[in-house]
Length: 265
Length: 259
Image (cartoon, rainbow over all chains, first blue to last red):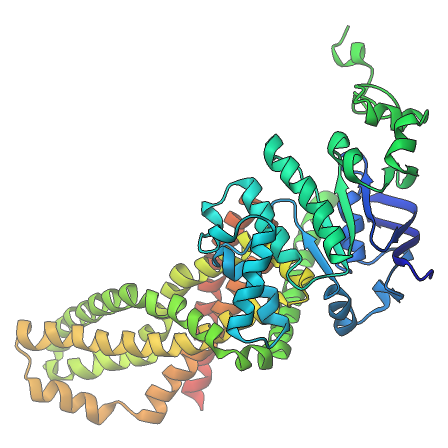
């Protein structure tokens, strides 16, 4: 594994009994970069994050995180690796019985023996970074979608992880919140010297700030490159995706019988 | 015809698979229990939610059950001229059977459903996954404290049920019907055996506590992460727990009466 590589996916295949999701995926994530994984709904983008986090095991191939093959680790090894990771879930996944402050303090309390005063300072600093220091006593139910996502982001970076994973960070957000999240992803990544892996299908936002992009289609990496390279790409799938074309290699119609036959014409 | 057998086979197989998964969860809880004992405040918090908040339903039900036992018991006993034995009847019925069994049924309906719905919703909203990704085991942090809270709570609730039930019986028998107060208490004291009656009732309530709590936890942990999945899991908690309690009660009683 190259020294500046933090995550590497090699010949990865994964599927359930009834459906093969990934056939052969190869990806590399370099330290300090913001890398996006894009593709249509259901193409297995989130599954890649779960494979990196060791929540599921590949059927062949492997994911290597910081020189360790994830699926070969025992429970202890996996937990050691996960301490280097932070993950932002699609809807935040904040603990609904804990306040904003306690949510961000949760990983710090679980993994360190820091004094209450230091925990308080750390939590307020993390919340300040996402602009929500003033909301520290609110409960998750009192937050808007965008605020919840920002609190979850503060929680994900509470232990200054090497890798930050984002699962659909822009889904369901208004344009202002979306801009805030985009900005935070870039700023936090650069401030922490971390590597960000973003799973998304929002083209405009991602192309504006990502360093490198992987496109997944039909279980393989269909295209990869910097945003400027991909904008110029002539590959039909990339063109359809980047320019939001209704029909193309990804058909508008789900596979069906002949239309006239279905209408008994 | 083949379809029919296939369906039966499929159902049996899925039940056995679920039983296996529940057993695995049980052993996983045991293996993580030392972690949750180290942070006993989590278990105490759950004792409050499952135990203290169930007190109202337990106390009110117990009082009524005791009063009904007093009425029914007096009606039958007076035919044989032994209405003073009403205290023994009420106490034995409560300590041996009704205390543990009714408490377990109420526990399944009040606390069991809450546990299943809470864990099921935590799963549906990815809170359990988030915990996993933070390198914190949900079994150690969420499941094990609830398990131990259930086991600690059930015998306590059953004892309270029996005590309040006896008071209910007393209220009906002594002030209302006029049974002699001395006979009521002295016969009870003479005929209720600590080892044979009270300890056996205690053992029953511990076993019911394990059964009801593990069922509620497993149903929540195994629930499909959808609104429908959680609602079905909650219903299954009540049905399975009630049947398990009644079945186990028969098995335990037969052992206790033969020993």
